[in-house]
Image (tube, rainbow, N blue to C red):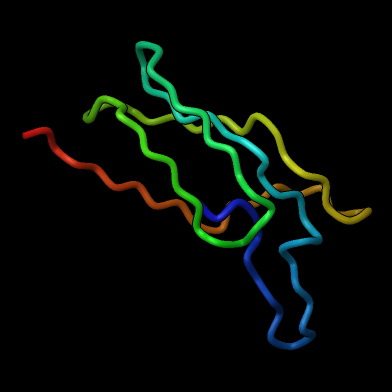
Length: 89
């Protein structure tokens, strides 16, 4: 996941990542209680966490903490989420 608004405005050069709130931590979970906590560096790079959650279930994402943005910027954005599923062999 990219834990914030990864955008630099082409017209103005404004870097939106540090202005808006950024994720500090989330919990990934599925029905039945299995869950994985993911914490983030204050960095716009894609950040990953390995998880063994049951395939075929609805995946829930709960934001548990975020970093403050600049005054007047109270949005918490996620620029990208990638989920890779592997089947057991």
